[in-house]
Image (cartoon, rainbow, N blue to C red):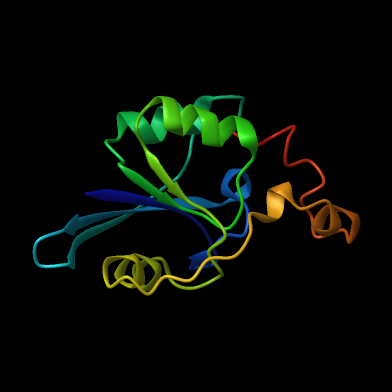
Length: 130
């Protein structure tokens, strides 16, 4: 399993398309342990680029805070499982919590109109959601 996590300042970023780097974590699913961690700079953000790039890297899962509808659909088309609504934490903690069945998630903030109204910096979610 290969998990991609949008990361900013060493923490899971609240929005998939607005991160500084992607932390790519290779996992041994039998032993439920992390075997490799890479931090990669994403390509220039344009529509559809990030899902295609992560799919090409072999990512099978995405853990994100929020993600727009278009990115969700693109991942689904490529068989990549998306877990959204995760809170800020270190990427390796998020992956280990997922492996242990204790990763808690809330709603997808990119789909919450109240979140956008309160100026949380996601006013462009759907213009830049992939």
